[in-house]
Length: 217
Image (cartoon, rainbow, N blue to C red; front, side, top):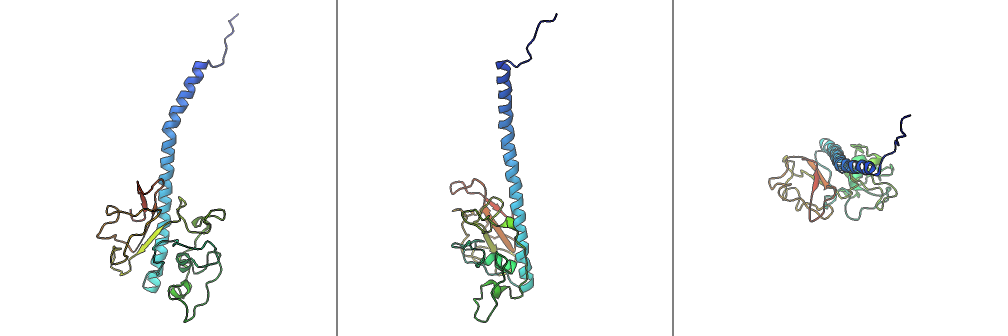
């Protein structure tokens, strides 16, 4: 008769398998994470492109870009999270409040910057989806955000319609997002050839290592 032979792994073999799995994980996980971040960046740029198209649609209809908050941020400082209240960027482009309710009726006494004064025809240039907003359980619910959940998003437009968005002629300072402001390498002094641009913080960026997601790059 053949001698009995155990089919179980030895401790040495188990340790070898665990070591191989650890090496493979160390190689694969960073690549997967990098691919996920790249995909999210691409999705954020698509989102910015759609918002830009809505802004361009507004300009085509009215002959000028909508006048937004002086902070040049999609969600300006102090923006209320109550969806039934004013959100200038959203309301101008959607022609309604975030909760879907109608804008107040326009009168001769209406503030010229209010959505009902700027978009008097109540044209919906963009239909914001639930994915465009932070969710109800967020510390700052019902604010517009990007794929990385950034709510600090800069928006700049070509105010003088010369084909360039330029510091000095279209705005006085570059808005900071998450405490970071693009430098000359990212935003040239000659300006950016575009009608509308957006930028937001890149994942993992901070004031010591600033990095951005730009709609024009």
